[in-house]
Image (tube, rainbow, N blue to C red; front, side, top):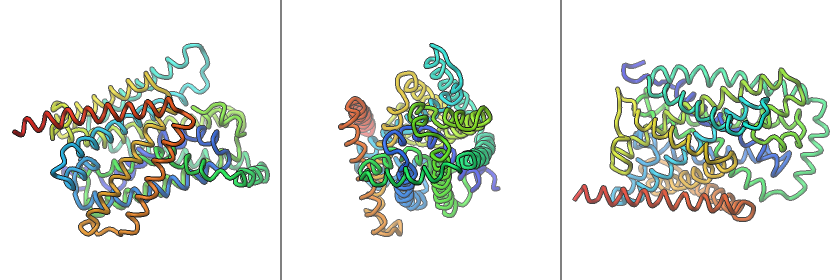
Length: 434
C-alpha cells in the first residue's frame, strides 16, 4: 500500500457495498411486497440491471476524468461553459445523498427499536437515527484510514450475517416452497408488468452507493483498475444478496406480516416465523448494514460536496479540510440529514432518493454517450442505459402522481428549491469571476 493512498480494492468494494447494502433490502422490502407481492425478486433483479447500466457510464467517466467530484465534476468538465448545469447537478446529487443518509439512519432506528413498544416510539426512533448519523460523522471526521478499516469490518461482517439470515429464512420456510411457487405464478399472471417496472425504479435507491468509489479517487491505489473492479464487483454482490435475502423472506414470512410492519418487515416477520433468535439475527444484520451505509455515504458524498463548494457553488466554508478530510462538509451533511429524519418518513426518503439518483444517472449516461469516443464507450450500451433510466424516472413520477400526489408535490418543491439554490450561487460565482 503506497503512502498517502490508504484505500485498496477491498476498502473500495466495502465503501460501495456499504452505500448499497444498507437501507437497501431492509427499507424497500415491505414497500415492494405491498405493491407486487411475490414478484419482488423480479423487480429487484430489474433494479440491479438498471444499476449495472448506470454503473457503466460512471466507470467510463470516472476512469477518464479521475476527479473526486465525481458526478458534479463529470458535468463541469464535459460542459465547461455551463456553470449553472454543473451547479444544479451538484445540488441535486448532494441532497440525494443526504436523503439516503436519512433513509439509512431511519431504517437503523426502526430495526434497533423493532421490539420496543410505547407511545414515544416515533420520537425515540428519530432520536436514535439522528444519534447514529452523529456517531459516523465523528468517525469520518477522525481518520480516513480508521474509517476504511471500520468500514471493512462492518461490511464484510454484515455479508456473513446476511448470508446466515438468508440460510435461516430459507431453511425455516423450505416447506412453504410449493405454496410460494404457486403464489408467484398467480402474481405473475395478474399482468403486473407496469407495477414491476415501478417497483424496480423505487428499488434503485437500494443500489445507490456504487458512485461513492469515484469520490475516493485521490485516496485509492491504481484508479484505472480499481474503479471498474470495485463498482462492478459491488453491484454484482448487491444483486446476489438482495435476491437471496428477498427470496428467503418470501419463503419464510407471510406476505401480510411483511406488509403490516413495512419499516422493520424482516425483523417482525422473522420473529413470527423463527422466534426470538430470528429477530436478534435480523436486527443485528440490519443495524450493521445500515451503519456501514451511513459511514460509506458520508465518506464519499462529503468529498463531492467539498469539491462543489471549492468551485463556489455552495458556501465556501464547506470546502475546508483538516488533514485532507472535509470535516465541514461531513458536519453539514449530517445536520441536514438529521433534519430530514426529524421531518420525514421512510417512503418519502425512498422515493426522493430513487428519483434523484435515476435522474442524475440518466444525465451521466447522456454525457458518456456524448463523449463516448474519449471514454472508449459502447454507443449501444449508452443508449440502452439512457432508455432504461428514463423509463425508471417516468415510472416513479407516474406512481407518485397517481397514488402519492403529496410525495410528488414534495419532490417537485424540493427540486425547485435546489434549482434556486444552484442559480443563486451560480450568479454569485459569476460576479466574483468578473
